[in-house]
Length: 379
Ligand SMILES: [Zn+2]
Image (tube, rainbow, N blue to C red; front, side, top):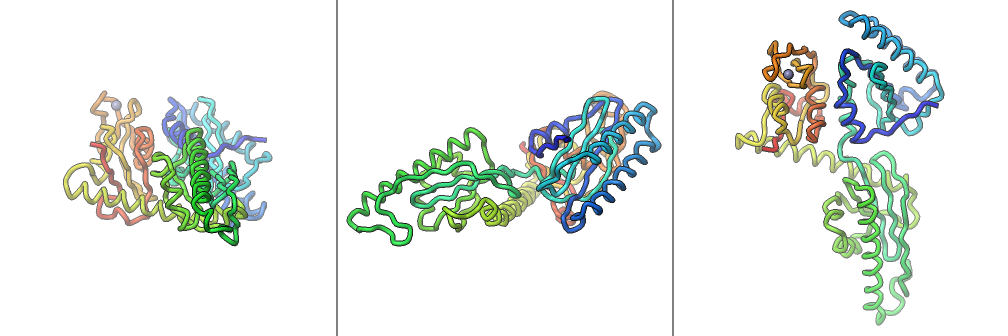
């Protein structure tokens, strides 16, 4: 059975940096939206039409003979892959990247649907992946006065990792403390339990860091737990939520945290837009419009790249060093004739990912007054 990998930041960076010489890359996205492609028949029809489209592209004009031959083999491999017994469990879409001459054949499982499409280009077509590259390593900790549970994963999938259970004397789930005079001592035991849970959480974080932490605890218990958190962990908390700490299933936890993560994502977009507005107002640390943004990317000054989803802006790329521009014939760095791009936003996103900038895809119209693309700058 063909292997399908999960998408992560390292994979996105690797694919973004891939630019095979004298060979084209075939990228195929298969939408698995359960509303449209629930039945095997519907899925099979969608696969057939994608592969037919890939086949047409592989025979298309503007390709050199060797590129055309290699692409046709890539299409065949894709055909074998889709004909095989691949598991699309939990996937909203599949992405396949193929370029035989550099030994690339990679299938990725995407957590949410994206539109089906076929692209033949000099690099893997990663723009649809960017929406999944947001900080999405999620940890949820559920904590009450004697139990702490740790789950991790993403907005779309959480797995149970570990449980800490401490023997807190005299505490009864329903009835509270059995005898008020023990309260002081019991409070100490609860503090010890919270400290224990916090140490375990920090150990989990050090082994495999997460970007976002959600805490399932009562409003009453939360301040005491928050005080125990290591600063590295505390700064990743995005929300507290109510949950049945001991009985909730991982899926119930996921359902509780997904809207909170979405809200944090909207806040992140709004914060980036606010930084953009302030930077543009002050005349530094931000820039807008295609040409200045490409210039900032060339100078590796971009901290956050904002662009409208689906924005289509023409530009040029130097095939030698990746220099980006709008309307010149030769790269100013080395005089190489540049390649024209119908949509240079894709190259801009790749450049941003490679310089560890944060790409943020916004709704169409949100950057209308800024030429549909803008950047917050490091300096
Ligand atoms: Zn150049």
